[in-house]
Image (cartoon, rainbow, N blue to C red; front, side, top):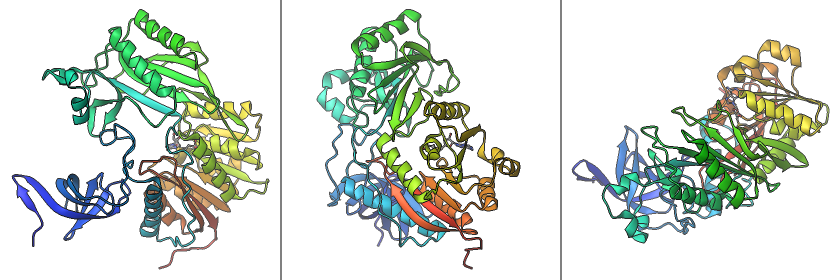
Length: 485
Ligand SMILES: C[S@@+](CC[C@H](N)C(=O)[O-])C[C@H]1O[C@@H](n2cnc3c(N)ncnc32)[C@H](O)[C@@H]1O
């Protein structure tokens, strides 16, 4: 019996039971042999879905009607939930989120690396699951995303047909709509004064005729607003303009300076390029310093507007503690910290080892790493900038010595096969592999099995209400092939 009801080109599948949740965060259902990934569905739901994309073995769908709501569902606390791409799992309780994250890591390691996960340690949840981020970047646009709730609450704002396209917004991109921005009123990701600053900047700009950027035509003055907060109480605000008259830029900066005396680093950038990246742009300090400080475990870290720093500071501390504990240093080790970013892990472990060699792609991050070592009077770190596969050569290893422990924390794509190859050649006693993508981690672990066995696994949640999860794995050198044929 076909369960499909076709209405024109629209395929509706009624009463689909959601049985699982996929790594990308979507609910999973099965209709005959077809696996269906359903946006915003929760295991336990029974839903009518509309297919939006169909491939040979799977389809993607959206909910048309929620017929039975899962017991795992909970009320979302944010007015923007459902439209905003930021916290997609807010409709599930935090305990359930953790359970699914743990399960997804376990499934990836089993399926893709055939690893025995029986001794996997429980996922570490985040103590704070609201206002946990230290950095947010908002986008200005002259095209506001409209949702039904906005229209119902403020019908006077939505009276004319063309106004819809021209209304200004300051907030986040709506998934799959690059030029449409959700006008954020309150965001639960970053503590005050983040919300007050964003809303005040919007009001100031509207009242003073500062134009919002047109993301398609590349016109308009205001482009991005970056807010960084830190555990030291310092606040950084950087406004990114496209084109602006000096008096207008000064006006907004002075407004922020006067109304938010807690801002310790007030900056602006004029980015006239088509792309948003500010890494190649000059930063102008309007008032205060050009950086703020973060503190962790008695160490200070300098953070500029371009610096990389883990966005959930408290949970980053937990992640680093687990990394260090997994490494089990005795004090004598030569450690390689691969993908070191601003050298946070390298500096975090430096006091417990003989020497740390950090490698990272972004030169400014390496400058920060060196600065942070000097700031904390750490003299047993060295840092190198460049692509990992080009830096981590046999000559480099001959020059710096064979490491006892390797810590590796690559981006979502995982490690290049040349880098994995080099790890196999280096034969460090231990590798601690920190990953934000269990699938690519599993792929790399499958290769490392040739000479290593996995002895500890612990997922850590850095991003509550999202599907993202970090995973820390300890590998021990076995010296022989572990591949079972
Ligand atoms: C997940 S972050 C790790 C950051 C750092 N371990 C920390 O905790 O702050 C990954 C880092 O890898 C760097 N990266 C990405 N591709 C790289 C490559 N091919 N070679 C070297 N570094 C790379 C990124 O710039 C980023 O800083």
